[in-house]
Amino acid sequence: MPGAANVCRNITIWELGSVRQAAGLMDAHIQRSVTFAKTNRKWQDKSSQAREGLQGRTFVGQGTQIVSSIAHGVEHGVYLELRAAFAGDYKILEEARDYNLSLLINQLRALFEGYGVTFRGLAGRFGYQTPSYYSGE
Image (tube, rainbow, N blue to C red):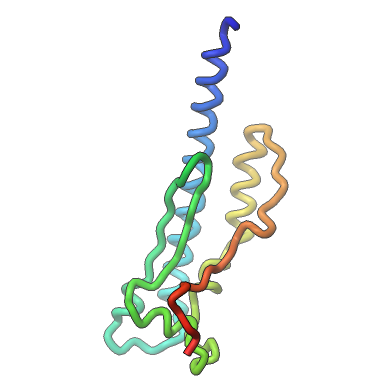
């Protein structure tokens, strides 16, 4: 069919562009989350390694999947977040991830609705995964 190759090429260009824009929005959000976590951490620095080790990253996975994460960069970070004996007193990652989440959702909605795509929301798309090696003790 004449022009079909151009249509496919244009769809691919649009898809790659919109995914890159969405990844950029998500990366900006996760970097704000890192700043929030460093500023609002619930522990007192002893060596500053835990605070300095907080990090965020965003990458485009297979197809249009975008993965954004915030994590500790030190081994004892998992204990600050999850150790049962601390009763959640020192955890910050979930709160940081959720910080200004509504701003990100509104930015993504504006991006995709600007392309004429119906935005149905992100309910159930954000999740916190506990490392499988952690026992909770």
